[in-house]
Length: 153
Image 1 (cartoon, helix red, strand yellow):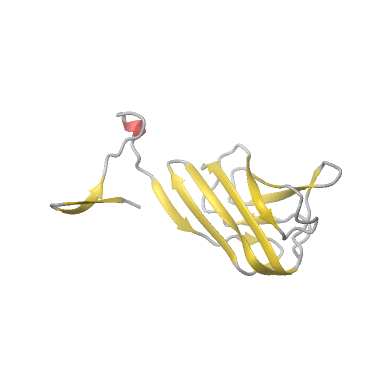
Image 2 (cartoon, rainbow, N blue to C red):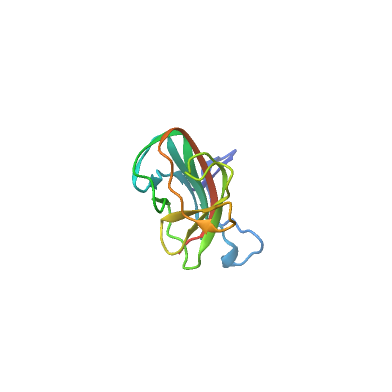
């Protein structure tokens, strides 16, 4: 996405924007925003959404389920695929700000981790203070909101 400049002499693209210095490494030359459709493994999810903003090699992604219905077999290792960019080799984690979709209840912390892929795995903190994998409960009225920032490959 290019930035547009409107002046008295016309409309044109803004180029050569630099942040934090005047060298070529400081040129803002890679900006993109868009939407995507997250795919949850093992079943069908309605009312899912995904959006992102990418600047350079850093992308901020938000996705989730908004009062959706889940069907199928969403048990075992719940994961999401179709994230907009492959992550770098190091593991990345993100936060779930609200969820009412996982089988273990809506008050447990949930973490998304992935490396060198466009797929993430959900982990959930159980009462015994250990991380485990719980399935997404099937039914209606499911909510989930994930926010993650990661470096691209």
